[in-house]
Length: 463
Image (cartoon, rainbow, N blue to C red; front, side, top):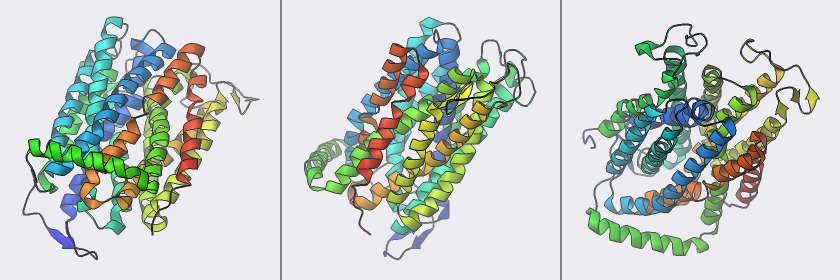
């Protein structure tokens, strides 16, 4: 629901925009959803699944890739349709609530993933697919609210601030899990040297598994301000009429895309580089676990550092977006990501850039070896560039499309972000399974970013 007594302010374009309370409440959506990406898909649950639920790290990476691909196919097929219907109905919040419920249910079900229980792998991956579909669709409709919140010249800052706030939420959630819930099975203590809260059993990795229910409860708690204080679009049509009108508008938009060269080219570029970015984040923690043998606490600490870099990157990227334009921010971010991936592929446990170095000592200090430190630095570059890449992409889309069809275009945006999103994880899964090499699987990401950067260079953006 929307609060009708919320304060408003004018702008240079003559429109009225809601006040600070509404904007801050909207920003908290990113805070509410980020633990899903931080805890489940990247730094805690995915590496735990590959290391302890699946038969081995390589097969775990492959299975996780296949499940990610399945979710991506569903999102790709349905997001433009739902976006078009939402534009016709006018409302965004009911859709966010419905798909948010899927996120909560799927995340909470991940608690069942006990170690060494292969019979639980299919339902566990099904829960992951449900939650992923929920969080991605909810994000589509949340993004579509942006043009009504701030004037066009502040869209970049709003988008960047949202991503930065989300990364802070990821840091806080990681600290909670690592510092108070997830313990080292050998010592029985958390990163802060205390026993896990609630009597969580380190041997059965309950501290890792609790990241699922925590993600669901976190979303419920922190998405409430958006529902209470951020105005929704006014209702336009009932659902039945909206379905007919929305699908008709979607057909018209799709037919007109060939005449909208720059929008179409940007959507194709987004399709390719988003596939690479999603795959990079999805498998970064798994790759580190397999390469360096890091446990949950080590991977989580790595995640906290990366999220801190992402917070700074998202905040700075938002300012650069309004100053230099989103296209330049996207291109710069992709260039650095490409260089970082190439660097990661040249880091081994006993060498950097093919130069032999001393490997990490078993039981030694955290990030003590040079390869681990190199991986940490390169990971920070990825974290710092990933946030502005995603934030500037959604602000660029808003600058390029009609205001009255923004949800529809965000549906297409999600389509291009997901229609081939199964290809990256699928290729990583296939190549990893075929070669039994995580490095070979990750090498495919170079192609995605190089191609996306080339296509983006051909996009013309009006001043």
